[in-house]
Amino acid sequence: MEHQPHIHCPHCAWEPRADSRWCCTSREPGSGCGTLWNTFWTAGCCPGCGHYWEMTQCLSCRRASPHAQWYHFPRLDEGHVGEREQSLETVD
Image 1 (tube, rainbow, N blue to C red):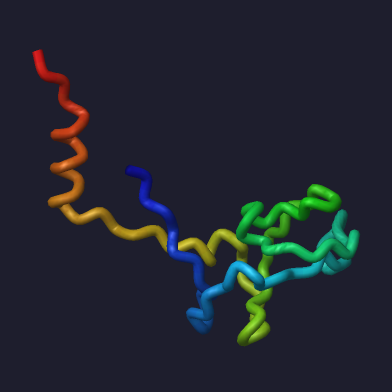
Image 2: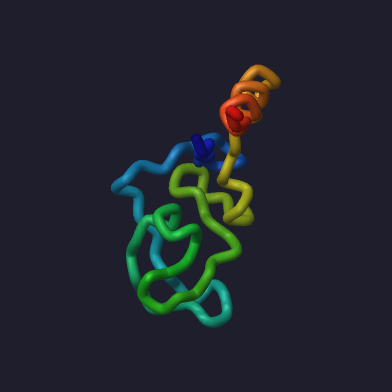
């Protein structure tokens, strides 16, 4: 089972909803097509022009941070690691 990241603003912990939308503006070179979309559906890639956004602005606190910092992966405790290793073993 693959662990999915928890997505929230690294500054204020605001969590984007399915209906949250960002606009492709001209803030970064090569961007600015005006497309509205949820940036986390595409890992920061604008579906209109293909620009990968390095920075993402929080719709709550308005602070920008690197897009990758929004993804918070759960830590695997030792119990889960052991269970995973056991499930990968083959029976002879």
